[in-house]
Image 1: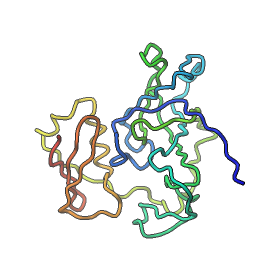
Image 2: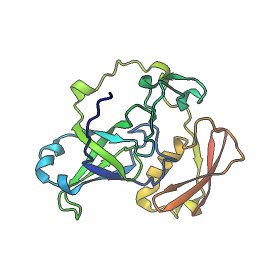
Image 3: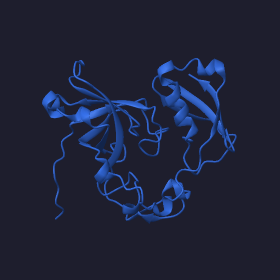
Length: 227
């Protein structure tokens, strides 16, 4: 018999990503991306956040709510390896896990105590879809959590698909000013699935209230339209 435990959703994060497409592959990659952590009514208590403003970074423990499934596989195919090589699920950050739990480090920008939604945390660098359930929040502690000498296994070298972005001025002006740098960061980090390399294909993803259309040829991403 498999043991189970109950997890309480303490809040949800609001971001510019209503779908999974375009979300950065790791937290902190696009530092300009902002998110609002809105607590469930039961946890809208200022005392629960007392002292949190003294920490510049936080750990978020959350649910891959769009990838909950029955069963699990001991191996997965990481996009960074082209989607063809299998490695152990516990050697990856794949969402397809025995328990659909994610972990992200985000920067705490502000604590809003007078918000209509109760105390709200404003964070940056989040890699979460809009509405993602949050299970817990913990402070990031540099002396214990930072390991500059750590090795990266098959991820050594980091993300190597940074792109140049051609953004026509007339389209760039359609983007709200407070979202421009974040959107540029998302595009520069190549939002396509890692196994896509078709220069003729037109991609699209929702960002806030916009639909971004683009194509990629070699190392250049061209924004084609904003709807």
